[in-house]
Image 1 (tube, rainbow, N blue to C red):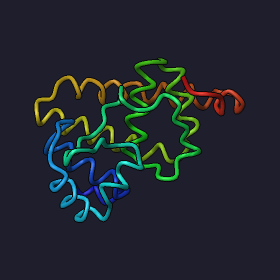
Image 2: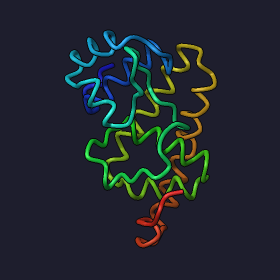
Image 3: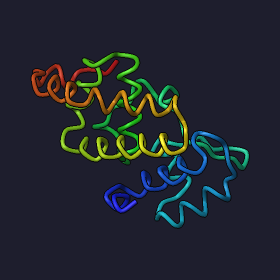
Image 4: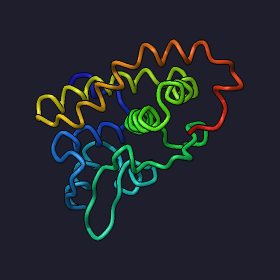
Length: 163
């Protein structure tokens, strides 16, 4: 919890929401209370691309629900939560080469994503969320290889289109 201050407000909101509700739906009122406490807004979380909201309900998006055409260089509200879940999505769909390409595009910002990945894995372990823990653990385990591949990648390839 002491590391939470290292993350952006949207990610701090998402960590707390995830710890309490996972990817389950809860009320807009609960999301709003938490957003105020974390210095963000529910609307902003939607703009950031990390929640789905409507009908008085809110939930975190799963990695497989994130847009495949996401470009971090165009993202005006890039946060650690979003980076982690796009990295997981790309790792699952495009393997280590695709995830390394995204890691290269994220550059130094990716360090906060790595820290958050460890934190989310610990939350999943503590809450007995084995399936979600596997996704975070997979990214944690792949990270050194992703860094190696990203460092060896030609600049033109790293700036190419994501899969």
